Length: 249
Image (cartoon, rainbow, N blue to C red; front, top):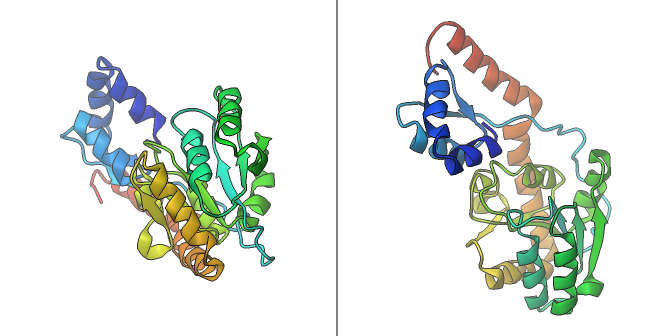
């Protein structure tokens, strides 16, 4: 389970019985985050769900070694769930003259651009639209921080990719993001919807670039340990072997 599947099942009550039947017939059930596992067991309480994230290409997402731009980065679909509107509100509240690159497209793009104008931050935002995967690593690696004010992320691969590039992440304490963005490993979590706290976290990193760099290095170490293909492959091999022998890990 990756996120959208569980969110859809939650919102369609007739799907609950189907989900219970499908999960109950499986020898092994996995979710990419502990939040998804909890949400699934609310629907199917008799099913044990193991947490097992997908792999990420750690050779593609690496630190650049070049000076950082000092800009913020947002990567995601431009809709309410991803929270770009909250980022714009936070940008207007920052005491530093922060600029932001917004990568992605979606149904809210026109409304978000209008919001940026009304908030007076239009000149501080660059809208890139949707980019190819190979275009993202340089943006991650040059940013001061990636901001993810999203709600109910299944996991948050953007946070993983960013931290692999030694770029710290500021995110909402929601969904699967707390599995990935952790204070003790270079991340910053704030309460969902608290754009003042979001702005304060941005200002904190902007005022101490050396601290932001240390946070990024700590985050990358943890991301490599959790999401490298070799580590994930070993985890899934163990799950498959347990399923083949009719046992659980």
